[in-house]
Image (cartoon, rainbow, N blue to C red; front, side):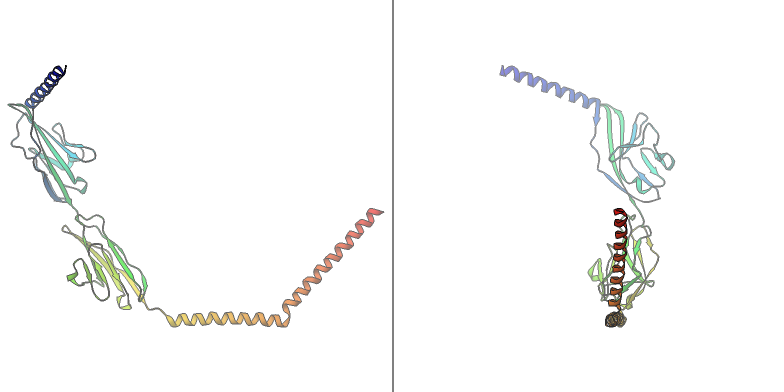
Length: 298
């Protein structure tokens, strides 16, 4: 029994091997080539090349964009989607005339053609990276600040690719710090981070008052936000002391007025008047009650 089961297992393995060899003869498959990386600037043109030896009449070509869901770019000898209006075919390659940031991603061309061994399938993968210039950055600058406090100015751009670096300007003059620190440039009054876009004053002073603007720059381009003014004022200690003195005087005057009224008996007269009015009301009510009881007895 054990020998028979072994023979059956060997026969099954031989059958699978024969089927696999027959499939390979009918559909030859070549492994994917090294992935290409193509870089393009937004709104310019780019060519996605499919590295296939030569085009024949019987060749069948398909282009697909890979991702969460696979979509056709070129199928049944026609460009698909919005590529119809802004792309064209050059043999097996695609020329995109007006590339956008939404075109970034991985593409795969698949070419099938008959061969001596049967139907041969080859494929090539291309990664498209789209460089985007920064937009006008968002700048956060406080309108006012007190001297001696910590103040932070923020600058940010969400569109640039690669991520931009930031530079701050005061009254149109570029703020330059200590270049030895790298991306964290500092001087006696502020620290500037060119990666995150922050400009921080640890102890802001009146000399730091002015109009501040920020520039975002990468390898594609640069944009600058409109200037915003920051006014730094000293803490008015004398004004605070004067206000405290005035409040103390008002409270003292009110207290003296209350004491004077109590000595004159204004509060006691009011109390006696309230007592007499309540007593008269009680007498009137007792007389009415007496009249009602008398009429009831009669």
